[in-house]
Length: 132
Image (tube, rainbow, N blue to C red; front, side, top):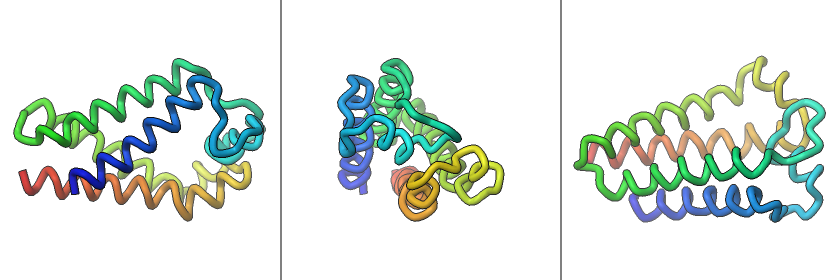
């Protein structure tokens, strides 16, 4: 579970790192990418370097924590991340969130892929925490 979760989180971190450097992957058009991965009403630009790199740092902290689940601080980080990912997964199905993020294809992708992935990550963190 640790290796699989590490791989998933590293892909997330790498995408955010690229976006922080204004490398628009996997969609080369910034506006279309923003509508696909941000989804906020009327979005035309990707978030800036600092927000993207903050996500990278946060994800790498979680990755480090899952490799040392017996340490108290690592357990705290994993529990915190578990709650964040679970909340992010759940909020995608609320009317409030859908009103805040109506752009397509984000709205559809969020319910089909992004939110379920967040829940899977939360479950993976729970498995690691309970088996440590």
